[in-house]
Structure formats: C-alpha cells, structure tokens
Image (cartoon, rainbow, N blue to C red; front, top):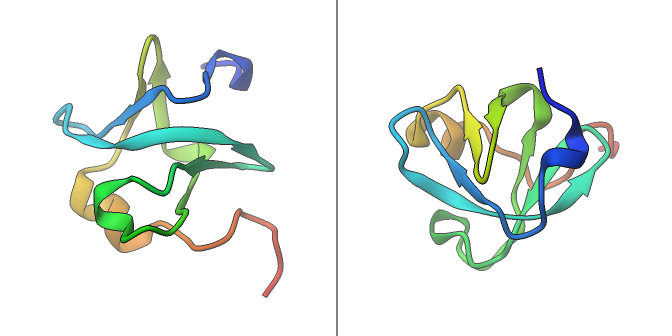
Length: 82
C-alpha cells in the first residue's frame, strides 16, 4: 500500500518491465495526470487510475504493461464526468 503523497511531481512512471510510461504532472482525484511530453500521448495529457500503482519509491511503478496502459489510459481524470 502507498500514500498518494509519496507520488512526487515529475516522478518517472514505469510499467511492469520498467519501461518508462511518462512523468507525473500531478494527482487529480483518483488519477495520476501525466505530463504532455509522455511519448505515446502525442502532446496531450493522459490520466491513469491510482488503482494501477503497484508501488512508489523514487518512481511510480504500475501493475500494467506499457501496451495495456496506452490502450486503457484516459483523456480525463476518473470521475470527471462525460
């Protein structure tokens, strides 16, 4: 278990194989907002659920592969409405 306060701005976000997904912009609701320079995001902010976080140290480690993340991430934070 982790405390969301452990997730630092600009921390690297890694998938299950330690591939870089992106960097944390900030926490919004129940989501991590990634910076726009996240390679697969094409200049847009992307959001990933906090539920995907496996652990936090100097990096945020997810329990998903890069492919799963890129297929499932959102354009809005969880609970932001339609």
